[in-house]
Structure formats: C-alpha cells, structure tokens
Length: 68
Image (cartoon, rainbow, N blue to C red; front, side, top):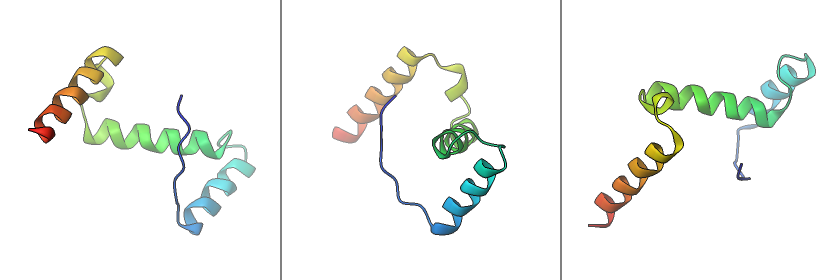
C-alpha cells in the first residue's frame, strides 16, 4: 500500500472518528479505503472485475491518450 495525504472537511473527520469510537470502523484509514472502494465500484463498474495487471494496462492506455 502507498501512503497519501488528504485534506478532509472537519465534519467528515469527526464523523469517521465517531464511527471509530463506536467500534464500527477499525480506523480512519480503513473508513477512507472503504469509501474509496465504494466510489470506484460505482464510478468504474468494471474496476472490481479487473485484476491488477489489467487495471495497470487501462491506466497506461489512459495516460498515452492524454499525452498525445
């Protein structure tokens, strides 16, 4: 896994912390991973069906189109 830095509205962070304190989520990182997973699954419907190599090929293809 890679470490990234994000900026969140305070309200989001507080809500995540409440869920963490209630034991619903194990950590803030896991909450963000879960939210991102749900977003990607919705926006990139094929995302869940792609193995890592196929997804990397898709990204490379997209970069090539942008650079040309």
